[in-house]
Length: 76
Ligand code: FES
Image (cartoon, rainbow, N blue to C red):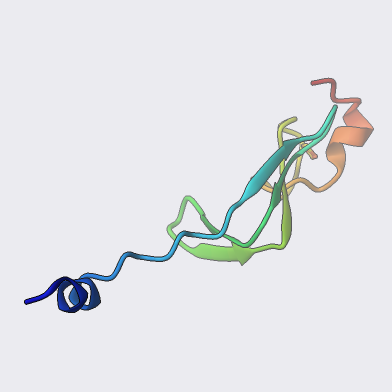
């Protein structure tokens, strides 16, 4: 088997798309990119292109931000 035949049988997997993470001042953790979120019950929720995760603990829609950080005056 030559190198090309071997490469075709074991192709290098493509690089996953780059995901960026932004910690927002006094707010959420903002993810830029398409992501799959595995919930505690095992279900997978596809999100993107921007997803905000709660850092303050006050969201009624955890793990996602629902804007409650503004009403509680979250600092961080
Ligand atoms: S960071 Fe937005 S609700 Fe917690």
